[in-house]
Amino acid sequence: MEFLAFLLRRLGWSLLVLLGLSVVIFTIARVVPGDPARMALGPTASADQVASLQESLGLNDPMFQQYATFLHGLARGDLGRSLLTEQSVTADIAKTFPATLELVICTILLAFALGVPLGVAAARWKDRWPDNLVRALAIGSAVMPTFFLALLLQILAGYVLNVLPTTGRLPGGIDFDAGWTGLVLVDSLIAGRGDVFLEAVRHLFLPTIALAAATMGQIARITRASMIDVSRQDYIEAARAFGVPDRLRMFKYMLRPAFVPPLTITGLEFASLIGNAFVVELIFSWPGMASYGIRAIVQKDLNAIMGVVMVSGVFFVVVNLMIDLLVGVVDPRVRIRGSRA
Amino acid sequence: MTALLSVRNLDVSFTTYGRRTQVLRDVSIDVPEGAQIALVGESGSGKTVLMKTVMGILPQPPAKVEGGAILFDDRDLLTMPERDRLRLRGTAMSMVFQDPMSSLNPVFTIYDQLGTILKHADRRLGRQRGRRERWARVLEVLEQVRMREPERVARSFPMQLSGGMRQRILIAMALLSEPRLLIADEPGTALDVTTQAQILNLLRDLVTRQNLALLMITHNLGVVRETSTYTYVMNQGRIVEQAPTAEIFAAPREAYTRELIAAVPRLTGRAT
Image 1 (cartoon, rainbow over the protein chains, first blue to last red):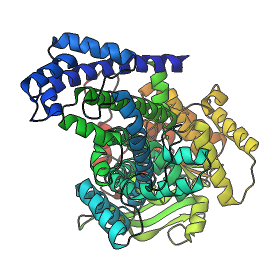
Image 2: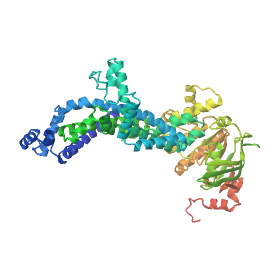
Image 3: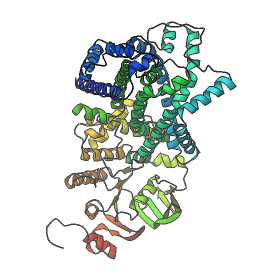
Image 4: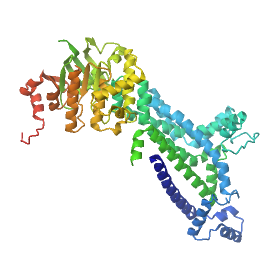
């Protein structure tokens, strides 16, 4: 019961946050200079044409009324039409979001699976060569611009070695669209199409590495710092004085209490990658929502901007809620305090 | 009377940022079987380093044992193989940690922590004990430290227990594998005076009933008077005075000891 109350309370707050987000983005999108109608029609369109598009988009209505129209549509799942693709924004997002999601999930899994062990190793051999290596890696991956790494990988693996595909989600020859989850990896497995799965993995390889590097470095750094912090605690010394073996001390007594910061960072990174994936998506011609969103912003495609921001917002809220629940599982202090509050 | 623990002429130094500091100089103490010995000194006098050296948990480097011997049962801990030493650690000689708030792992239950220690102590000693027997042993030591609901306590996380209870759990932890020597590092300093008195009472009872040797490390002379029959006074890494506890209080020979005694706050309200 307590858990349900906690969940409902969190969901309530999340709704408020999303509402606030929509107001802010709605206002900003309309206040920044540039006329969406003029941009959509191009420089050769006549002033009359522009004016009539403005009228039909409702841009001449008071801002308040425009927002009410937006909310009304949102409640029905209708985000309006995109000026750029001339499709419904909902349909555009349904088509592009799974591609980004698949890329981001693989990225987070890779970054976490590498980052945590690297951080643990660095803490275990603090100030020795494994630590120095991990620190160099972490800093290197943090300062290396994602686009540079993406291009480097593309040139190396794609053109020089010619072993991995450099664009798209699947080869042009394969037309696979099961349309269940939109995640090719999952759908191909459900459909029993091993060949499609393998191709999907090959295509995911480079963009995932390019996108994961910085996050992995971040997770490794946080894990290292957190492990070192915990290793100085009295209870670790106590475990040593009572003869608890080294490995058990590392992986149970230290890693568990040290696990919350890496978990939190992973959640934040997960959510922000949805937006930041656009560089990688552009370079690898990945048909995802991040690059769709960037095009929408450049073209002042108001409905598409709102749609992308709202979907990212919902995703952010959901991921953070999941992380909060996970943190409660890992750390009883959070769980017990949370249920009392 | 041969001593159970005998520290002989121990020298320990620390090197930090290239500077070497001698923290223990020619320290010798004896803890006979079943005796209650106190080691008293102010913060930074080297008591904790001595204790950690004996327990073998001194971080080396930066610390370095420069010379001397630590005999336990007439075998030198400093020269014996690491395997043998590990066999003693937490079993024949174990330690009561000082701070109940930070010496228990916050994310595991009491049973999880005590059970793990017991399991590995058994393994080092080549003993067999099933899961059910382990649970029973943990409850047994929790009862020994006068825990009223041992089963509930065993299933609790540290944060669900009071400071006094946690300190008693630290004592239970030290008792798990039937030690012969208990080293107590100012137990209860972090607690209020009443609770600390209860803890010291409990400790004294356990030590006499189970005939354990106790080395009580403290800066508190009240604690010394309560818990020991023989006292070593330590200052700046040296043993400056040693005598039966009653003598130390009746006729302190060293100026440092007199200062320590004078520094004890009085509760009578008289100006001193």
